[in-house]
Amino acid sequence: MTSRRPDFNPYTIPVIYKWFATVTVIFLVAAGIKQTPYLLIIALAIYNGIFGFLILKRSLNQEHKLLLLGIDFAICVSLLIFSGGWASPYFQYGLSFLILSALLFGFTGAGLSITLYGIFYFIGLRLNSFGIDKIIAEGYLESFIIDYAIFIAVGLSSAFISKVINSLGLQVNASEDK
Image (cartoon, rainbow, N blue to C red; front, top):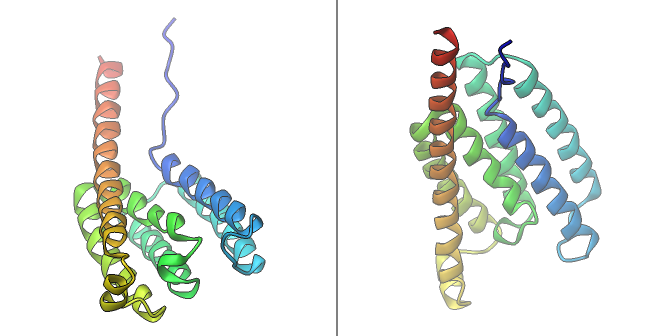
């Protein structure tokens, strides 16, 4: 009798992360630390449900991956831009785009998402009156650099995890075929 290991879907990680980050936002809002419309949280929960269903229940070809990643990027960036940029309670939620792009496209996806997200993060700051001059004047430069270093670390570590999971999956499949 051979025991078969259940297949692990590597996309489970961003789905779990999206819900964890949403719970974090709800906690921040409920505690009065950050203010945001509750309707936005409800919309985000609906999006998370749809996202989770699509990514875990369907096989994704290249075109679907790109579409899903584009939608997720637009939502994450919009949340940051329209809810305070740097001071947004959705800051952590926005990291899910980095995780997803790294899991879907490896190190190439991580590099591209780090670059794109950095550009749009800066635009979000700018639209919320946080230019480089204000960041420096108010002593936030170190925090700004640390935040972007977190973006880079999350993206690259997600790509590494994706590579390890895929490698282990190939090894398990090869040993089961023997």
